[in-house]
Length: 74
Image 1 (tube, rainbow, N blue to C red):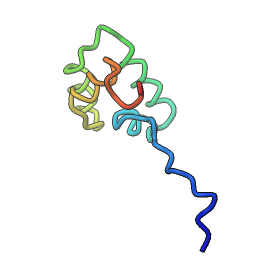
Image 2 (image 1 turned 45 degrees about the vertical axis):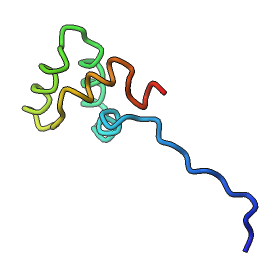
Image 3 (image 1 turned 120 degrees about the horizontal axis):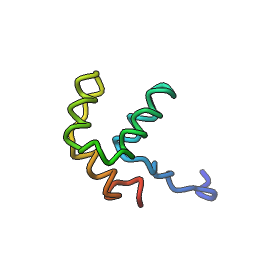
Image 4 (image 1 turned 135 degrees about the vertical axis):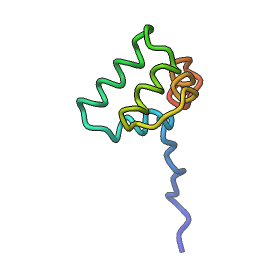
């Protein structure tokens, strides 16, 4: 047994919202990223619109990501 050369696990820096966005096809991912950047979309309205289209999400992860209070910002 050799205990030399161990490396700590790599922490994934994406929040749950962005991990889900990363699983989308490129066109849809770019659209969601654009919606997140658009201040005309409230977190609640965006969550409702995305959920209605099959991307089930609540407003909390959207708010956290926008407020930079998610793991993406750390």
